[in-house]
Image 1 (tube, rainbow, N blue to C red):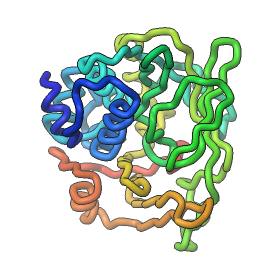
Image 2 (image 1 turned 90 degrees about the vertical axis):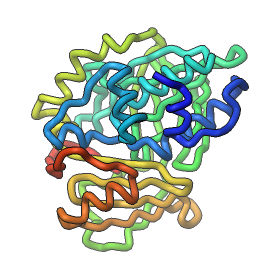
Image 3 (image 1 turned 180 degrees about the vertical axis):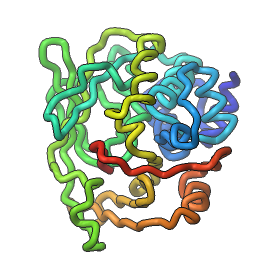
Amino acid sequence: MDIEAYFKRIGYKNSRNTLDLETLTDILQHQIRTVPFENLTMHCGGSMELGLQAAFDQIVRKNRGGWCLQVNHLLYWALTMMGFETTMLGGYVYNSPAKKYSSAMIHLLVQVTLDGRSYIVDAGFGRSYQIWEPLELISGKDQPQVPCIFRLTEENGIWYLDQIRREQYIPHQEFLNSDLLEMEKYRKIYSFTLEPRTIEDFESISTYLQTSPASVFTSKSFCSLQTPEGVHCLVGWTLSYRRFSYKDNVDLVEFKTLKEEEIEEVLKTLFGVSLERKLVPKHGDRFFTI
């Protein structure tokens, strides 16, 4: 695996040697704007492979995206190769309808320590929940970013990531009650501890998430990619674009229902994704908002 190939894939041409917060932020932003958060392989009859080599081949060599177990694994590898002090962590995702965090560790994220300060770096949550900058590991501090205000809180060794969202304006009236819309202004995202993890810790959950009817990954096909102003999302046949801060404290959310023959071109033009096999779009009933 070639770190220069990774840099080329994400379009990064800046310093490889300066290990500071500016460089860390730059790497994160380049990755989230070029590497989609997506599970399309599952809905093309394939599987989401867990290994680092498989993630590198899919994301770097095939110009695809992936889910957190792939995109954050690759990010962890790249930052480690650059010389950053990194730790792989595991998270428990909040389920809004059930009002609780997942019982299983289903999210991979990265901790980076710089000059005695620790940061959470995560390129694998996508949609309007995606952080755009590393979050300093400080409890109770509001950390405003372009997508929203993020907040980390620590209680008895467990850290919680939440966000405070803006109002949203949806000009297409037929989508006002879409199940893809996040209606809560204060949103819990996930919890985690600082216990170091390895990719092998995610083996069983990777299988479960790809096979269980209860998994959102089997229920919905999705692809999301951050832009300098917002985020594109494709869920099933529904394409959306959220523009952050369209007006004061308001996001603009536009929707379009695609015809099946339009999906391939949209994936190429908006997400930079070319699929090797035919996608079977799916919009199941599991909770998944943009």
